[in-house]
Length: 246
Image 1 (tube, rainbow, N blue to C red):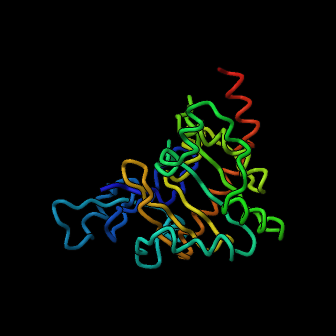
Image 2 (cartoon, one colour; image 1 turned 90 degrees about the vertical axis):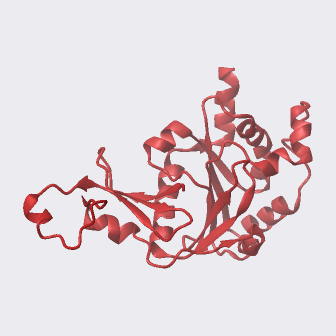
């Protein structure tokens, strides 16, 4: 079963970290193994398979989930949030490609060399323009590999249309994201209050979203947003760097 990174208090190469074991209600704790013999003899009901680790209290205060795991919902269950959010809708994109992009007519046109940067407005862009005209913010950070995958190059090429509609889309190299210990999953964060975390199949098809307002989940998403946004660069600038390196 896959592990999902929740959060860490590691700043200088320490290891205190929490992971969710996906598909279960269990949390995996990473820390220093307890070796003090005075402590070990005081432990009770110890199974041969069990071990014990030390972690700072702050790790549990900041990241330990406080509610039960949310159920997987279809993406359509959150479409209203893109109209009803009050201040910010922020997205982290971590994957190397998306099935929804590859299955779209736009993908074939891009592969044929057509200019897809300024396509006519669709429902998504129309809503972005409406919300941003009201003073709200649509923002996202996309992780990009070196060199970019086809899926990432497609998004770099098509991004200007979304930017024109009102989105602020920025790009962050994956290696830098890993140094920052950013999550390895996609999510939307609405008004710093609600997180919608994506679930994907191995072929990059969206299976649905897990929606939560759990304080620990929201805090972790806010911290990831702040770190990613600080280091990411605007799409236009990043695309110019990629073009100059080819």
